[in-house]
Length: 419
Image 1: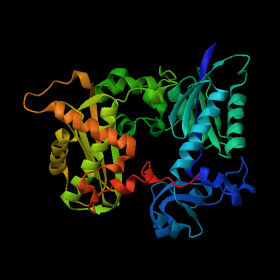
Image 2: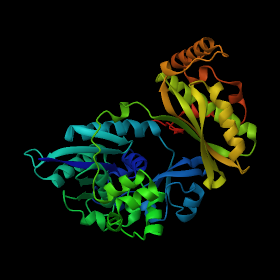
Image 3: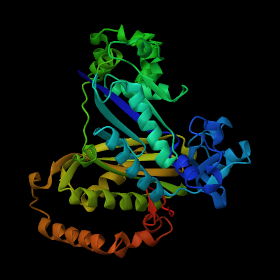
């Protein structure tokens, strides 16, 4: 008896939640008919006809609408689009309920994202005698309870299940099963379908002439290691349909390996002082999360996306010691900005801290009043915990560049809305 691994993915999740929650669309919708949905998109600010597309139903996509497209461009392509603002609270609550439904069908389950989940079950077994039928049962249950369609990939391991899931999005019924030992469906796929490789897939095609995953499987492990380092071993395993990753039921409770925070700005920022204000607000949040976890970071990173979401940079730098205090990290982030910023307008900023240590492992400084700083941060964190993030904040957040007050009313950077 072996395990079959599955990856279930909700179709156009945010858009599906919106369609399912609106009575005017419920009568005509069918599980087996994507085109029974309205041409609906979830976008940042429908009232101002601005922002980007966060999600689109299949009929909207059939009109050329894509995720991250500007709303104005989408409306020029399809003026009849139904445009709704995001309701993040609705999506998060629906996600939690769907995850519970998945666990009820397959107790060995791992949430992968807000709209994806891995699961596994023994086969052959009395309970799961037909893998496709078992997946179909889950698919039907999610539709019956939430009126949301899903696609399911089944395979001998998690990585292959993810790839199979991507294929399932293109076939009738939305379920694909690759039995153990059958690598032909995997090897026939284009090399770009090797999930998780990103630009490395382009290198495999350009430098090694690999058109398919099967072509990659015929490249020696040594050649892959010479070109990609330790990633060469991963690529070699994946191309042979191998992945030892287990299901982690408590993956969301696992210790963090890094902390990050990112914001998309309401306009392009050109002034250094404005960008510096945003960086400090993001860093304050990252450091708060570090302290809450009892961790400190020894490497910091700054990511910038330029105007029109075209170009940008991400750079990281090691610190001399691990920190969880914004004042100790902030100068390094400003140095990264000054060194790598081209001067173009900035539309998004991200701050990260990794190379984490436990707070107890950090070396104390002879030249700083560490206990006083720790007590100050502890007091600020306590005030925020009791009275909210906007109960105490930096004066810079009151300037035109400050994003803290507006983001405090949002979830995941979007308006929470009402379920």
